[in-house]
Picture 1 (tube, rainbow, N blue to C red):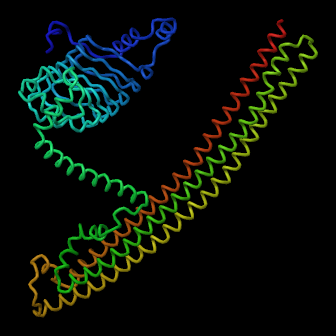
Picture 2: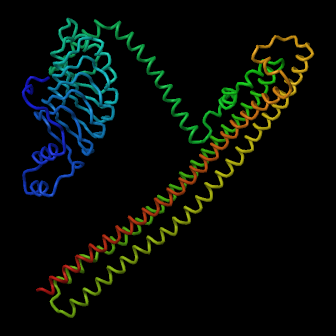
Picture 3: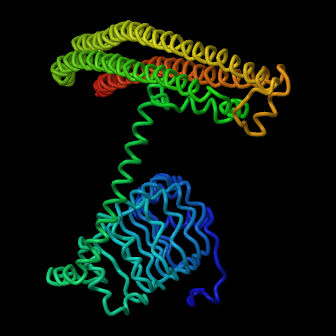
Length: 523
């Protein structure tokens, strides 16, 4: 345990500690005093200092969701935890603690500066999520293996590194190795790396660097391929035809088909099965290609709709702005005229006239909004009909193709049954020349057994085809329904926001007139 705190009782990071810290670190002016009286919301805090608090465990920070800077140095913390919700954190100081492993940082994707100086860390790892890391302080720890440096090559923005005070820093080749394998580093152990040092380091470790780069390129190529495959799969899922661009569905039909796999050993079934598979896969590919084309049509329809909506909203907004600009040209003049008017009768008349102008402005803005609502309602209804027609056509054609898969399965079932019964007759007559596995021969005790085996295989295949069709239809309809519902909800929310904006603006100008009227009456 940290010697500074051996005689002090460890403290819990509780609500009271956090409130006290936030209050002490807030502004000292009148606004700060008012904030302390009314209470400061943790979600509004951007910087928090909790150093020298004898904290043993990080906890209760989940409310600080917008925190940018967190100082937890000089405590007795043993484990990095409780930081999951601090996704906006940029600066984190955990120096002078008792931490033995780097962990618990997976959500801190915006972290740029991390200090773990003076802890008990022996390995540099678990920093993969910190893609923006620029400054890393790991001095005075227990890092002894030079291969830890290789791990840091993935951080392309890393410019400042501190490792002094570790066993690794006593290595003869310490600085040269780091300069060679981290060529973008600018500062090492608080000193700027000069270009001459970098050149010498590169020459010394040229062979090792070239070999490492080759491995890294291979790994990166593999990662790129995996990412491309994931992206491609997501595109296929968006079209509801994932895994239909090959034999996946066919293979899944036989993956759990015990009886079907046994029957594949019968004479002539291998050729029959291959012909069945070839035709089945062609239909699946037809569904897949058709699905991608229909997805593109749906995308074009949606993009066109969104463009129309945005154009209508923008045009309506511009009309509103012009009306408001025209009103504001006379608004200040009218207020000044009212302010300068001394005759009561004329004053009341001018106030009434301007109040009428404000009402006319309100009515005009609300009329524009109602026109937009009607225009968008018509556009949304047209889009809804079009997208539902596209979805219905897609489902209808897919179901037709799936019916072809079932026809193939039925045909295969009939042929397999014929071969199975013929094989049974040969076995009973002792005329079968082929040597069948024992578990396959066990099916041929009588006609009912073999018919049941063939039927079980057939039912399983049809179930797989039906399930894939049902999944596609359900997901497609669900997507369409959710999309239309979201569009309607978005329009309702847009209308509410716009009406609120109009009311707020009109209330503002009306209040200006009312306040002026009151002051004129008082005068």
